[in-house]
Image 1 (cartoon, helix red, strand yellow):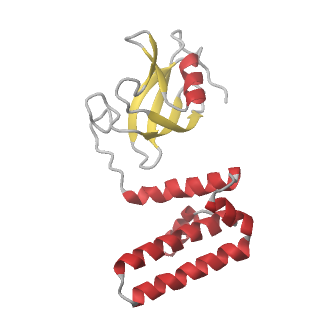
Image 2 (cartoon, rainbow, N blue to C red; image 1 turned 45 degrees about the vertical axis):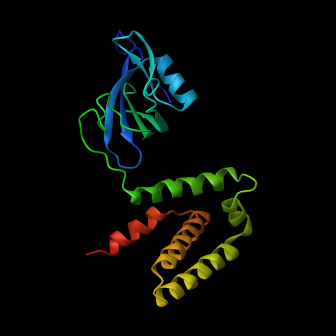
Image 3 (cartoon, rainbow, N blue to C red; image 1 turned 90 degrees about the horizontal axis):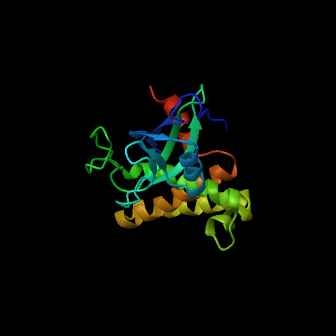
Length: 199
């Protein structure tokens, strides 16, 4: 990815920080080429502090790091959009964002984190991972697991056992997400399909 750090005489470009899960804009900072390279290498956002005149990794004092998920440049290659998973509040005031906006972490967003985790397992296939073993077992076995979990979910629903219903339904959803990933899809494709049906 080409980034034009020489467009301004300062050698700095703006970096917009966005929450990977909520899409909320968290803050704006500036990077020089060294800060950018450190960000990519370490996986934590590092800025060039214009007041301190040095590199500054967000969270180096507070522990509220910004874990990098992706980095992209704009059409002119002179600004960055960095999607992150924030560890704690982002603003030095203690607010979730530098505009004092709330950035609630609804548990629903964990589904995207889980889908990303499953996709990572599919790509890396680490030994000893249950998810890896599912991918290695093939379509028929994964589909069988989905069927088994569906039956168990129905049984607990009919037994009015709410705690077990949630447990088995969670197993069902997880195995369904693995099956979707195995076939080249994700839970977001289900959301797209359901949205098309919704009137």
